[in-house]
Length: 314
Image 1: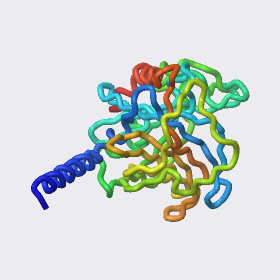
Image 2: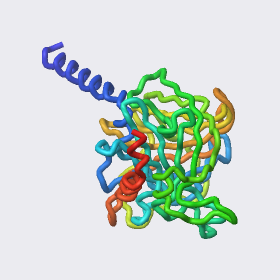
Image 3: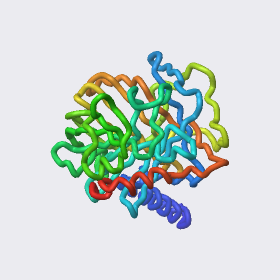
């Protein structure tokens, strides 16, 4: 073998080693390297057979995660492409040890919200997560630095900020005032995460549990253009959250062709450890571009700024 080929092989080996060596940094996995106007179009599905699925929305929804290193916050925007809904999703905080879920958009409540709406359209309306043993922490979902044997257990409480539970029923209040003064009403008491784990796998298929989807084909959201199909990734970070040993949620982040895509799949399972059955999943299907508005995180940044506890939690 001539010297040129030997040098080329060594260079390629070093390049691959260098690229893979970066995967211990959880923030890299969560920080999508798609251009600002692009996001992942996902399909929300429910299981209707061993390998058969049914689309729930029939329109691609957005997934994209972004890291704000100056604020030490991570944004996961999802569900809505409406330019007024840039706060929809989940907000994480991090320090040198952990990445923690701090708040998420709150679902419909019958005594508060207009019938027929699924999510509340207010930036100051959210669910707050708090670690029972360390109230300054949120819900730990991953270590700051990955290792294959990492595991974590915890008990959390959640609070509903932006509404009051005073008699005779819920009503709307300033959620930022509530959370900053520690007055958000309790929503869930002592939710047990039996085990939270994080591991990296190779050759990941987002349709690992079946590719047959019933129903009409998904539609592109208005104002978007198609940037190409997604399915298989060279590597994936799988964060697994087991609750009470009876339910499981997974959050999966992808890496392919030298690029970190951020979150590419979420799923929910029933069963028990070693015997899980995925019932719902939201999976990456295509890269989409918003030709009308860049895919912004404006509302999520504003939520992180106005919620003072997000900064105190770091």
